[in-house]
Image (cartoon, rainbow, N blue to C red; front, side, top):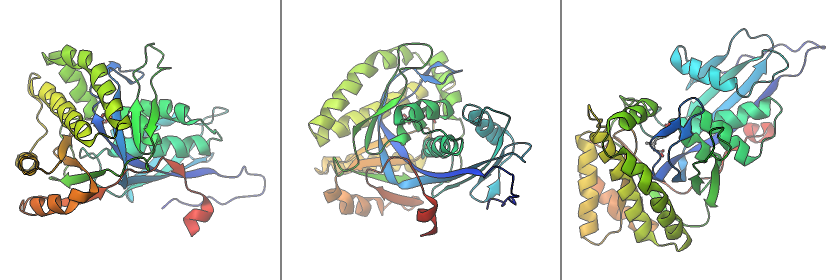
Length: 344
Ligand code: PMV
């Protein structure tokens, strides 16, 4: 845990804050960047924040530190992962002088395995660091900052169903997320199926660049996204579950189709991934409305309504190679955890 600094009388009080943020899973996917330096998405996206997967992060700016320290799940992090956190903190740290931070973070789920740990991670880091730096940012601004750490993190600032907008200008002013419906609007479920515990092979940024450069379907993907987003907004307004599911599954396969058509091909799936996909199709042919989505990793997420959870669990129990399941509900927005709450 964080080492405690002795506070002598004339020292400034420690500037510290702790935030929690939940992962989100995209229903209409984000894949592709229009600017690498500002991390601007090439397309908008729509996601559901999930209640069961979360990151808790404490940030303390301390004048005595000579560099940033980053601890994740009880282990000191060095190398590129620490550098990534450190350059992100440059966007936030108090500017009156160089001030380094101690960052202590915990994920309650596997990191970097296609389960959106960068989304919850950078959303929690943005909120905790900005508050520790004395800033009280509006959600829109938090979202813009979080986006620069990881595109999907912009969405984890909010709970429920969220839209990330693709802006029109190169400064990224219009590239932020907004809430479409809060977590109480629609009692949906996402069954998150862990098919492998190892980290993903190709990170999302690298994968996006590679796809944009070599996939013959990339321009079609970009062109069709506004219509997919509009259809999804309507499905949400109408609470049309079948439409929601169909659009979700289609967006997922469009994205993976793009990746597979890249040269060399980008394939994130393993045999268990395919078994789960086939099982969900089988369920659907029996009249059970369940739809899949997958990200830059081999894990499968199954979108359904609460009434079908038992049938889905039963069907998945026949696949022995599944490592773990989470049954997720729409989750809450990122928030600061007060000291009082922490102690309780
Ligand atoms: O936020 P990033 O850079 O890790 O990209 C996320 C990409 C996907 O998870 C595959 C899709 C998405 O919209 O979350």
